[in-house]
Image 1 (cartoon, one colour):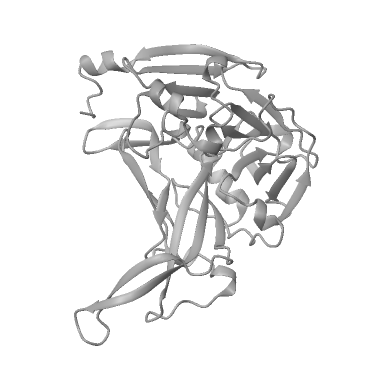
Image 2 (cartoon, one colour):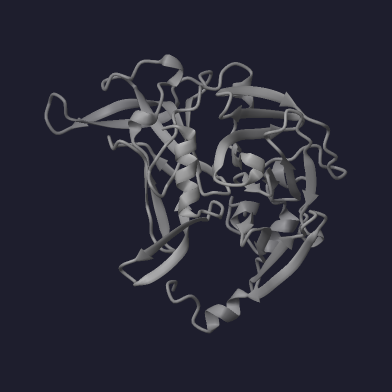
Length: 362
């Protein structure tokens, strides 16, 4: 559908939050009203419904994303696999991020997997195939990608964004962000959007008004010593007219994707939250592993499991949970000028659990 109708519909609904995003609704089973939801961001595209859908559930339960398979483009023009071939088509869908208005950016990967038929069950001809999966069918073949902007409240969806081709495809990872912007001096409903990903000084960008992907070169961003690059490990966040790419080990970079000369700016996490620079290279080393009291053989406690940057109440916030009793949850708010973080809350979760915990959780 036309962009202005899609975005105007969202504005009319009053969305004003991030990927734990807003949707005013009532849970008839519990009789509770709620204004935000938790989304299970990944799913397999399946079925023939005309449009995607979110099955809303009140938090802390997860709302479920459903995406029909007809939205996926064929991988680089490849034909559909024959049912009797040793290749299977998997359509993996992810809600990459949300805009500040609650729109979702959907990414559908068309993946071809080697899956040898080892037996058949049922009728001699056409019975169910039992397969042994062995990996990607062709390691040199990049999966086909389809991107859409989706309104989860009324199920309206944009036209498929153009395919990312050539050198641009190398920059298209899993950290695309979505930012909307209003015309007429910034007032009224949004009338355009940008989808972008930042890699060093390069930005891969799609603008709704041009309808094309392009690569821009931005200014150099100074990172702390010993940190040659920022490696995002959560979804991009839209806040304060910019997209924020977050490395939960040490900080975030923000930039305006509507600018033809992006000027990325680095914001460090609170001083006590900086992790060693080698975390990305080796996971959590033995010293840190002992400090975290996380000793499962071969397991690694990744930063995204206990840290998060997001928008709540109109502010950019950072939260983290400690790993030992009493499991302290700390919440920080970024100052208005972006110069630093202010500690707002520090709560011992063990005490809450001792007092009965959350009524919906054991």
